[in-house]
Image (cartoon, rainbow, N blue to C red; front, side):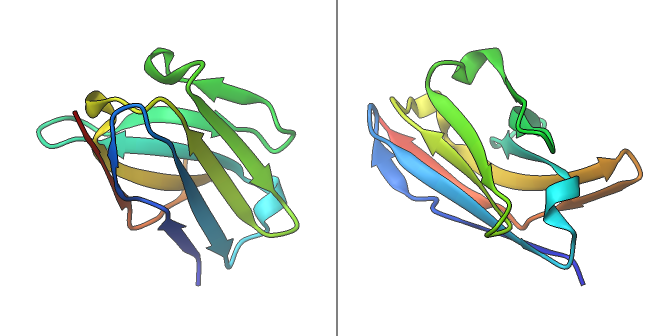
Amino acid sequence: QVQLVESGGALVQAGGSLRLSCAASGIIFSIYAMGWYRQAPGNQRELVARISQGGTTDYADLVKGRFTISRDNAKNTVYLQMNNLKPDDTAVYYCNAMLSYSVNFWGQGTQVTVSS
């Protein structure tokens, strides 16, 4: 049974920082590309950052320079370090594990709220 469990979401003031974690089980973590997505009320789910099996990273323009994605294959965990948070970063953040377009899994989400 595949499980992706996110943690680290919280209420934070603008300019603050958070680190999200996503612990995976039930998959061979190292062969999956991992990603963080977010969805704000009334909006579609959007890509925030992703990291390939080899560690190559990719970011949405809105978070470049502020967010950093990383992975620890020994711990089956992917992280999202978020700095200089803005109210527009408020959303539910979801972890994704992708092996292919037909083989991918989602976590349950963690709420990030940034107050102005």
